[in-house]
Length: 405
View 1 (cartoon, one colour):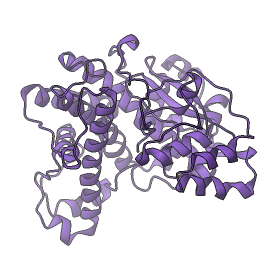
View 2 (tube, rainbow, N blue to C red; view 1 turned 180 degrees about the vertical axis):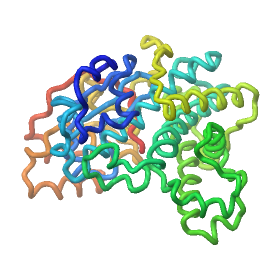
View 3 (cartoon, one colour; view 1 turned 90 degrees about the vertical axis):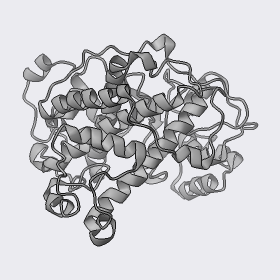
View 4 (tube, rainbow, N blue to C red; view 1 turned 30 degrees about the horizontal axis):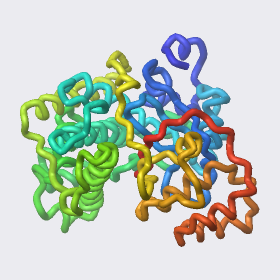
């Protein structure tokens, strides 16, 4: 279903998530592919929450879906048809909406690349001289995904009236606690707050870059728990995104960017240089048209695959927050007897390792043993528990995926 003509040939069932405009965009955008990875999401459903195991890379114009998952089953059947049977425990809707979030990452990476070609977002050598420019561009894609899906769409609709699938997950948006029904409370501490305006994109992008709450009185964080819940989450989220993207860029630089100190990871990003001001305004306008005016806006050129960022081959402990285990195994760069796993990434490594196998093939009495081995950072124990299982049939997968949430 990659074009509007195909959609018009048949009626979209009232239960289908394709009724959600951004989901329809994701399926119709000719620049974007939905790619199944050799992963069983049942490990995430049952054992390795909250870590999602499919990963993403916004520069490849690919949205990754676990082969064994509610979303993959739905896509293989008929996305436009009745869909309740796939939404067991609301898992389909959760996966579909996070895929839409990742779709906006991919779309906005193309737009940023087009609006600021001098930065070389996704292809330029990553160095100490340009790493902040690249981090700023990535924060813009995060702001796009959050503003577009959460603030400008989910915060304004009753999702079950759009998609009659019985979901209980979206009483609030996907990643934030803001909703337009609480606007009166938020405006007690910022009378000029208006989220449903194109200018809000620039406000949130600046907020993610700096952590500064322009327009809000300090009492907003002490006198109103509704306002505090919303803003404190976003303050933490913005800082977390600055940390994650700096860690990823340092990793992808192959040593050209030295490791950051803990404080340096959290540092603010400037938003006041002329090109940064201009791109925030232009990107916000395009996002507004995509979300509010239902324009696909798919004509921005994809990034050249040959020149995309690639991490150097592993040398020392492997950071599985940014590395696809399936790709290492396919390239014979993995030996469970000698592998060194970077400490902070062990839980993600364990989830990747286990999810190469079908969850249903592991005896129920071994489920807790796998979780315990992951907690103990025990590679040998995991290998022993999983060695008799047959892995999912491999597919050609990129080595560089981001697994941090």
